[in-house]
Amino acid sequence: MSKDPNSEIPKWKQDFPIEQKEATHVSRREFAKFLTLLSGALAVGNTAIVVKSLAFPEKPLEGEHAICMESEVREGDSFMFEIEGSKTIPYLLINLGNGEWRAFEQKCTHLSCAVKYRHDLGQIECPCHKGYFNPRTGDVIQGPPPRRLPQLEVVIREGQVFVKAQQS
Amino acid sequence: MSDFRQSQNEAHPNKTNTLMTGIIFLLILFVTIQIWFLFGTLNNALQENLNFAITTAVGSLVFAFASFWLMKYLPEPIKRKMKK
Image (cartoon, rainbow over all chains, first blue to last red; front, top):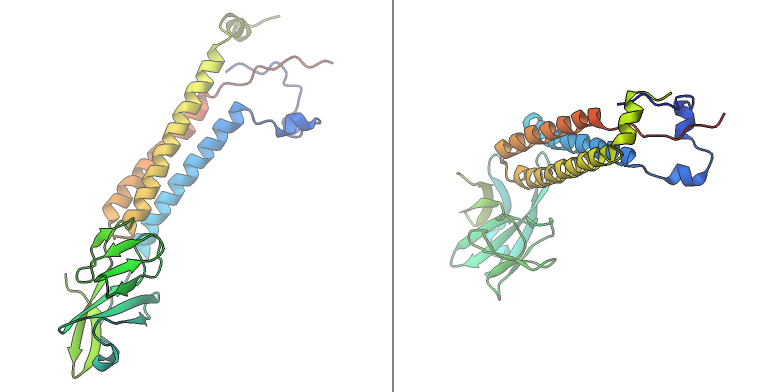
């Protein structure tokens, strides 16, 4: 816009005023500049997520992993285990009874709290914010979790429990 | 001696104010939408929904460029004369 009529005050002097009142004052211009900077930072953050997803895609679980013996997990009980991969993910193996076994990621899809199987309720519970999941499908029954629990396929062979990635 | 800009500012003292309010209002709107996009992307990236992430990233960049472009219209402050 107009040329500043008081251009005698150099820029460095404007940025370091003598009075404290002037130093702590945030003008509307400064506020608008801060908002612009924030807008740029948000765009960079959003782009970084895309770049990360494209450059480092998560590798699917490969092969079968032996977990434990079938006799170690009683009916209605669950068993925690971890699988080392590109990152270590905790899982929950559940013996639902009648030969039904399920394995889910143990991290709640809401805020990554550890979920546990409640046989008395017949549901998987997240104790942090009372989220409940279906122990057969991993679907959300109730509470704040936005997505179902990721599931693995369970294979029982010669009394031993194996897990592998679910075939879609 | 007063110039054209000075007489304009004196004739329409609210102009700078209106322009400033409009710019800040637009910037807040852009940033709000960008936060919404980022929240959605974080949620959807976990579900391996890459298309959503790409779309929101492009949208967010457009808003960021619009914000920087708005800076062009940021009015200069009207300052008092400095005593010599």
